[in-house]
Length: 370
Image (tube, rainbow, N blue to C red; front, side, top):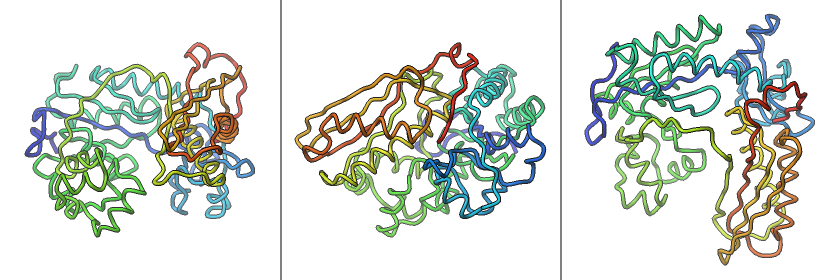
């Protein structure tokens, strides 16, 4: 199957050829590769159940029991008691990720890393002079396996959204192409919760509106989507039509990684606010692990009901080791910022001041508990 030659009606960049590469169960697959006794067994890479750990990645054998990333490790072991738990070895994972990115750059310099184990490539014009993005994707999968003994799944299409959707379809080691002329019928049949960019909460709201598939979503006009979802409604309007004109961006490593949430109603509920800070902390910790980053500065942002905003930061001598510790630090900062004194509208947690590559390569023993 050849690469797409155009874009869906209304799309931008008709000639673009985009590949999304996503490594299969990256951390767990590396551990199974390096430890033959783990092959064929359910493997969980994540934090300890005793310390409120979270699953970072799990092998496909563990997924067969219903285990998935971001699940509390304690829940994962209830589902799969025979699973083997390993702590992440982020330095090793980052070294292998660098090898994989080197392969990408053999074909194009338009590479946008999304995390330590996935990236977008624009191969419209490429170093090999190859016209078929599908053949390039297949060659990249082969090169990755030859150099790392790991498998990757690939999606090929005319934009980033469709390429990402395609790479998720046939894992592991799949290669899926969505041609521009196929995009509408393909998206029409897709459940809304499978759309990249539509999270669990948004999917629940759409289901409450009796919107279950892409076809249902496409029946909603711009004004309806904006009324229910604000600015992101425009994004939903476009992606359900297969339209995504975002370029592949080759930016540097981020200076900070954070998450924030705006409450549906201002709150003074201590339990709710504490849970929110801890939840955001675990999400940030997972993002850091996924990007191979370790940071030493924690910042908490509080926005009160009157829109007054307070930030509190703390820099540490060593990187924040895990989501549990990040949650403790963030809670201390939030309390110092007056989190319980006035109704809260927004809470944010950010980590910055990342270790440099040189610092990452120092022989330092770190404990990870995501």
